[in-house]
Image 1 (cartoon, rainbow, N blue to C red):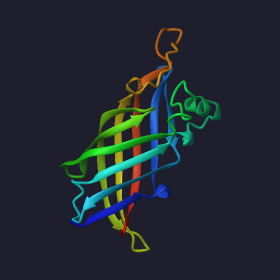
Image 2: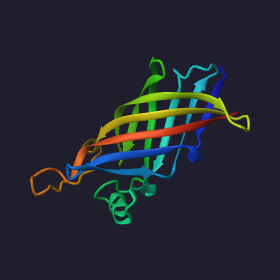
Image 3: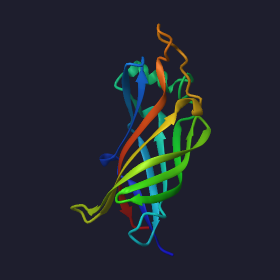
Image 4: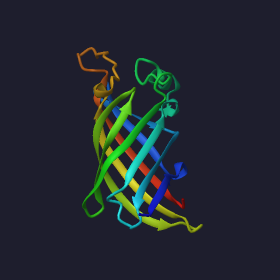
Length: 179
């Protein structure tokens, strides 16, 4: 059976996260270096798609250099020992309309957990160079404690300095690669 291979176009994609800070606001960050691909059957239906995404932990950017360096340290992501965060899908299922569920194994700091993500399929289009493109908006939540990302500092009122839930949000555009 023939298959279609697609790769992330990093110039037209972004991967962000948010986490509560001091219980009063959110800190937003991004991974600026990442790669990924997905493979489908020969038809236009993406239901059998298999996705892989790898994010370079050293590329974390929260718009604060000191915080970024701390996030790369052993206190958080331990980038020296675990320089890549990886997602490998196990299923991609159509729900209704443009809505899909993406299930897969997320590995952070050598710990792998199954995650379920919501996907809004933006559709496909040919660009000005005749290249087929597909767009997806991916959202979901993970608990940082599941991946041993700890910062147990507390506020004066006893609340956690950082929330436990990390909100994920990615807009990714893939280009079709003829292999």
